[in-house]
Amino acid sequence: MDNSCKTPRWRLLKAQLNNLSPKDFAAQIKATAQAVIIDVRTEQEYAVGHITNAINIDYLDEAFWDKIEALTSTDTSTFFVYCRSGRRSIRACTLMRNGGFDNARIFNLDGGYSLWVEYFG
Image (cartoon, rainbow, N blue to C red; front, top):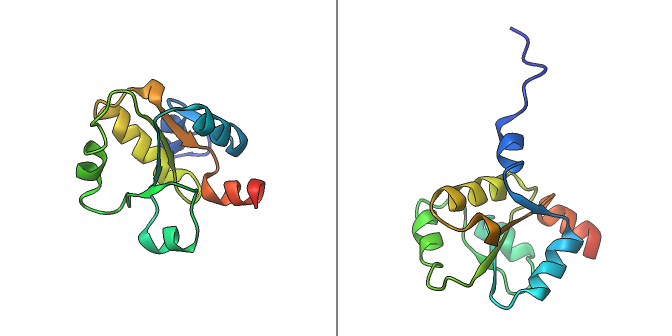
């Protein structure tokens, strides 16, 4: 069986999201009154460095969804989600969208924190 033409599942999920480059991600955060920046990496990754004002909610934590649901206290928040490379954040954004969050108010950092650091230093 030839799998060479199959698109990986994460690419299909990503295509359904609002993916922003580091420059656009930063600009959108700045332009958003109630921006909630979510770092879905581990505590150890977060401790090494993170985007200013980001909250750390580890995607691999079994309480992840409970912590994400707790963020829905306001209907006017816009969520900016990132991880190291973009894979976990794609899954987190997809889970949020499928869990009832407004997809128009969920943004994924394309390329993750690694690309952010390359762009902003």
